[in-house]
Length: 227
Ligand SMILES: [Zn+2]
Image 1 (cartoon, rainbow, N blue to C red):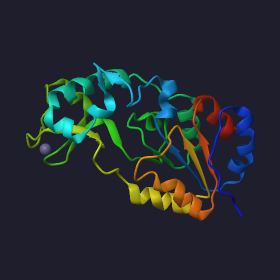
Image 2 (cartoon, rainbow, N blue to C red):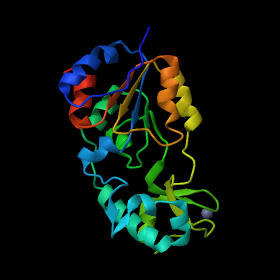
Image 3 (cartoon, rainbow, N blue to C red):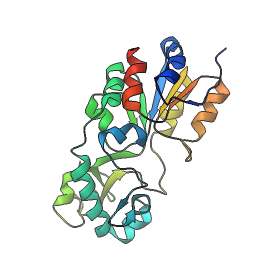
């Protein structure tokens, strides 16, 4: 019977212990967070922009109260994040081709070629109309201080989950967890609700959980490629 594990792979010696688990798994599920994109040069929500901690800016309240300030930051993000490229961890997961659930809005899994990717916090490079719901490209934000919907004139918001809003696809995520026989968690502590239900669900099913906290760009290609 499979055993419950919650460990950190910090270097390749740790990884050697997990390689047989990965090779034996027939239905692994990968869950990624900000840590996988650090090697692509992206900031995390704990960093600041013009003295504002990003975590406090990307809230529904802040967007509704100060949309212009929000969009000033958002445009900076589009400018810098749009140039980010997938790193070897994203590329190794795309070559593997299995299901990936990501907390990231940076689009790097899709840019690397992952087709089975659930983006539970949405996509930074799209805007969604708060009135009629249509999606438009993020670069429309460069046309106006606070961009408006081309269809209904409503305010456009970034197509991402702001703090205080529910994550997306969560039922599908839990279905994937229910089918998986191994979880590989990369660059996230998954300590925020509702994603924090996932380790407990894996525990109840007795399936292994491998956690890679740092240096995913070295460890993931080694694990998936069996180097
Ligand atoms: Zn609209």
